[in-house]
Length: 261
Image (cartoon, rainbow, N blue to C red; front, side):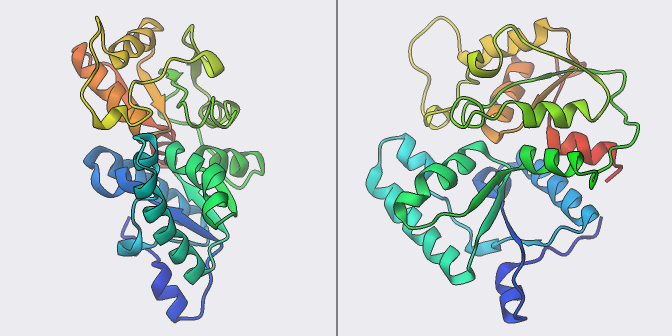
């Protein structure tokens, strides 16, 4: 689709105020794999006529990795810059495809000067499906077995387990669970700023353990809803030499594919 992204500054110059800010996040901006997820979600937003905009080059890191790594000074510096931008554009509602950004905006930004409605894209898609505003047709995944990996910052940190599963169930395909799921799910291995440091001594990488659990279900698609999880599980699939028969897809990609977008 030939989409012209609505930019917040352009809309403000036209005296327009979009309902939502889509926070692309560092992964959506810089990671080649997760850019595909951001594009898929954007195509869904355009398909449904959602009133939204992005910050474009004005978007910066919200400070989550700095805080997880223990650098409080850097977190507050980055957060104060983002809050200033939010105030300039009177941002009241945010949609994010990253649970880490979701958690930071929802639970930590009220302490640094901003509070508003924060929605993870799994919740946003689920709500549209339940309100019959997003109709998922007979899809291309009906012969696939799908297993969902719970992101820590969506699940345990914010008690959201059902939204991504309901989105997958709307695809009318077979969904299975790993033995460790929901509040007992194993981390992908990237949380707590582990993504940005060398592995600590041990017998096995966490991502390898989690990927083995997912593959043991017999699923041909490992569904995720987090850029950190996608990176780690994609590495795990490669480590097991299963790229030919197992895919790692974000739920936004699955919906976009089902809609033919």
